[in-house]
Image (cartoon, rainbow, N blue to C red; front, side):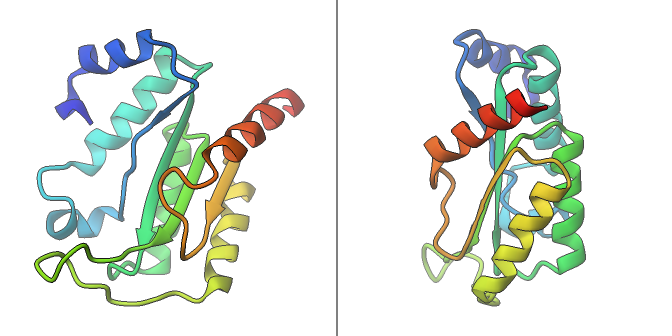
Length: 154
């Protein structure tokens, strides 16, 4: 999140990327234990500022499930992302990189991911890829095409 430095974000936006991606990773209540050194509000501010100064550049974010989040917390996080103007979303299963990392606390059923995808689209995301095997750049090209199509229809 560039530690909140807007000039660093502007450097990236000046290159005119098709998509600016910054993953929020988890719900705010879990940030201290999962995203050490990161700040939920600062990340949302980065995404919102990007959309404000470069409205034609798509923004994308992603979260992981299985860290101990509740469904209500996930719902609020998705709403926060949309309020920040995020266009594209990925939701995948958290897998601990090592035993020293936060443990996996649950493995949601595939149906839950389908429900999150439907919810994301219902609140205005232009594209969403949600599933246990989804990773941050999963189907990036397809999500980008969905977003372009959605923008043309809007």
